[in-house]
Each structure stands twice: as structure tokens, then as C-alpha cells.
Length: 59
Length: 363
Ligand code: SF4
Image (cartoon, rainbow over all chains, first blue to last red):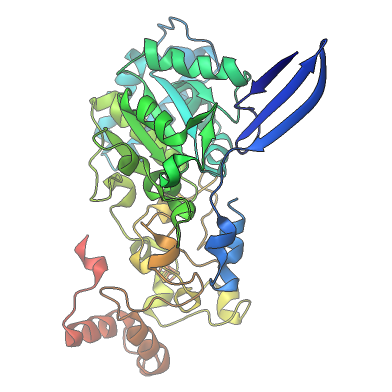
């Protein structure tokens, strides 16, 4: 029984970590985590709605 | 994305091997001289440097980013520039495009940091969160802050590509939930260049590397650590719509006649009068276009704190130091142009009457 972690996952946009539980050569459970957060939802609060596209398109 | 090897071939040799013609190579060197605002007499020096110099190793770190700068690099459309960028530097680590994942990716990075200590270029894309111990961005279990300290701290120089890496960008927009900062603030004391822009312009990044290879030094920088060749002039002064500004011809509604005729976007919120960047001359996507040419006002993407310092994107510039454009623009639009006075003169008169110099004149 082993737990493996692959971090960073490459060739994607963003930061991702995958952890997997391996038993007898088979993955029995797995977890994914996004490992980066900027709080764009918080940043958008109170802004001129007309400019929100410019921020969200950069997520 | 090769494994570290003793690659002793010069930049030109490796370009030639890839089928880049001598003619395209010389053209590239000329473009670089022009981008660096150097007279053409410097072209031979650039040629000579790229003929002799080996490719410096480089690693590309991504932190609080959207990979827009990576896209900007990879989508360079000039026939040779993408090859040149990837060939001028030997890119050993780049999360979005590298083959290895997890431990092998980590190893590629560590190999450069250890074996090329003090010699490689660290390219950083994305902001670095400092709040709560830096937990808002981790890679391989390490915080972006710790990685930046190690990787940028051991590099010959760091290039902060894009606004986020330069001064925090979007992540640092009010209320900056994660305490995001740029590379220079996160790792004090390093040698670095800010190449902001949302995204960065690949030609400015390449020109900075070429300058470093040719002259062994960083290009002249402004107070915000940006190269003067790219950020020494305000957009407004090189804008193809400037004649319309001076003539008081403004777009006042999306899709109105003025918009269709390519008039000035000042009234629609253009921040060009306050933004220092070479977009109008260098443009984007291999010189195809730039936001104002496409009909959208500039939102000062390369200016520090642009999301908060200039007001909303579609609000006319107000209450900024040296402002006066409101008065000027309205007067020109409403009265002065009507009596056919020259916009430039009106501009100057109003400015003189107010006794406040325009920011644009400081350059
Ligand atoms: S205000 Fe904007 S669109 Fe108008 S001339 Fe200046 S930079 Fe160009």
C-alpha cells in the first residue's frame, strides 16, 4: 500500500497536485488539489461591472 | 526542452541547424536593434554576439499566473521569433510545455539551479503571494516565495515577465487577498528586469536577453525597473489615433461613426496619455495589431497598479497628476475645434493657463 503524489502536473494551465493511493498495482483512491489561489472573486467585488471581463479572462 | 547537456554550439549555429536562413537571422538581429532603439550600426555587434555566444540556460517559473505570458511567447507569429526565443535561451524548465511531471520536473529545475549556479536566467511569470506564509501558491509542496528565493537568488538575472511578476498584477488588485507582490519585492537584492504588460510582449523580452548577450549588461531601466527602450515613451505620443485627439475627434459611443472611422478613444476611457509602453510601434502577434488599433482603449496594463490607480477601464482619465485632458478634450470637442483652432495650440494654451506640466512632457 503506497501513496504517491505528482506535483507539479505539467502541460496544463494552472497548478495541480494529484495524490493517489495505490494497492496491489491499482489506484484505489485519488485526490486532486489546485495549489494556487488569487481570490479573483474577492477582487471583483465592488468593481465597475463593465471591466470584470478583463479580470476574469485572466484566470 | 532538452536535458542539460554540454551544448557548446553558438546561438547562430543552433539556429542554422534548425533551418533558420542567414537572411532571417540578420533580419532578426536588425529587429532586435530597432526594438532596443539602437542605431543600425549596432546590428553587426548583435550578429557577432549571437554568432559567438552559447545559449544561456533558462528556467521559466509560473506562480500566480494565467499562462498568458507563456501564450504570448509561444504564439509569436514572426517566422523566426518563436524559434529564436527558444533558441536564444536553452529553456530547461517550463511547467506548461515540459514533458516531465512531478519529480522529474523538479529535478530538471534543481539541475539548472545547482549546475548553472550564477549563470542561468530565471524567467518568472505570475505574482508571488506573501500572506499567511505564502500558502496561496505551492509547487511540489514548496511555496512560490521559497522557490523564487532559491531560483532567482541563484540566477545571473531574473526576468519578471508580465505585470503579475513585475508588481503583482491582477492578484495584487484591491484588496490583494493573498498579499501578492512582484519578483523584485519578493526577493530583495536580486538583479532583475521587469517586463510588464498583460501579457508581456515577446519581442521586448527577447530584446532584453539579446542586449544582455551582446553587451553583457542589462538595458537601461526606468524607476520601475522596466527597460527604457520599451517603456520610455507614452502610448499617446505614438498612437495612430493621436491626430484625432488633437483635432477633438472622439469616439463617444461604441460603434458610433467616430468609432467606425478610427477616432480617438480618450472619451471611452483610454489610458494611453498616462501609460508608458511601446505597443503602438512594436504591436502584437508579430506586428499585426494592438488594442487601440483594434478599437479598444488602452487600460495601462503595464503600469504599476493599473487595476486601481487609473480608475475603471471605461472611465475617462480623471484626477491623475498632470490631468487636464478632460478640459482640453471637451473644449477642443465642443468649441475650439468648432472654430477650427488647432487642437495642439489649444492644448498648449490650456496647459499653460493651468500652469501644470503634462506628464507626457517629462519623458
Ligand atoms: S487617448 Fe488613447 S486613443 Fe486617443 S490618441 Fe491617446 S492613446 Fe490614442
